[in-house]
Image 1: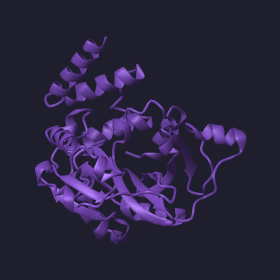
Image 2: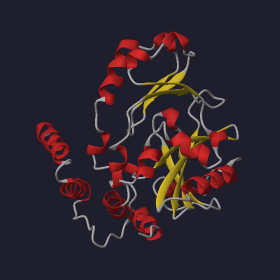
Image 3: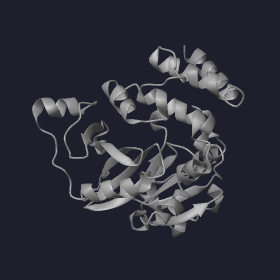
Image 4: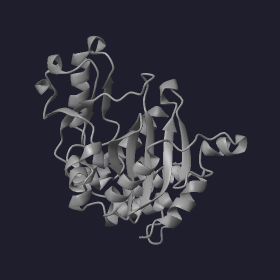
Length: 289
């Protein structure tokens, strides 16, 4: 079975260059067990697939999907103060002078998602293994994995940024604002990541819980967290950064009340998020194509 899955995955990656729509429809069918409707998309995941073929080839999407170049966009929107500290930018892992870096830092490639190495102790970092992994990532065309054209033309780099941690030494809460036609509609809050079993809670812009994913449990027990200090600031930044797009998810961290920019995401889960369920229809109704 693993061999079959690997063969199918490899075939789809190769076919992505010549038959992107076929590949997108195949990925969608594998995930949802139903056909993808690109002619009259209704649900959120369907509309994300539509955007791949009708919007995301534009230069502004390449700029903002680039985890390095997006800093220029954030500054141009008057939000430069929320950028995380940048220690260095590299074309090759061998260019990284680890001796000059602090004890804790984060390495990432700029041309996709999931290309992250978090170092919380330089003494325990396997530099050779780290460099091999970074080299492997730099060779990958992330855009072909699930047909995400905004990543295709990015000039590939390695970034080294400041390590972000809360007062407990763990990951800060992650706030992901779903913005439609320049307006934030819902925020997904990722909590308890340090426990290894993160929870995903959804709220509207007045911090009323939405019945998506783990939030249902909170509603049933009436135990959802209070609106955090800095929430309204994040919302204002989301408005500024989302103004140019039909849809974008603006991601932030909140560290002791201070807002830190994460990234702009145009295709959450590549438009293949099976966990959305009820949210798929509700979020889809907000996205006007």
